[in-house]
Length: 176
Image (cartoon, rainbow, N blue to C red):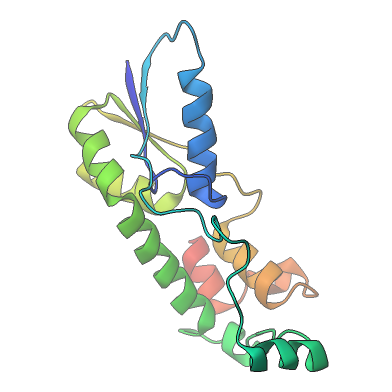
């Protein structure tokens, strides 16, 4: 069986790229593989801050941080709670970025694998729409809650009761 993992180019950068990099290394270490397992190509970009540690900050930025601390962004509750607000924009941007980052591995996987293995719903949706007859699409979601609820809860309103957040229009529509 040929299994193709779908995702961004692999690399030692953390996140999905780093996760797939580790899976690729583990698969390569298997002395007797029972299946052919393919992964996205390795990233050609250098890991962030690889050569010299932190990138240099401007003097004014360092002074401001020293005096006032870092700047944090938190969306207004009204923008999280309304239809077509910040949650909708962020999920659409996330979907677009994921699709762009995964497009090469998806095309390769659909062309030559028996099983296309995705790690999030946007690639799974694309794979389901484009797969050939008999080709299987598997999805492993790594979060314990749906992405949109995680985004609304942990990033925007961590003090809110999750049962309240699932009633917000953008959260509800993406859950559905």
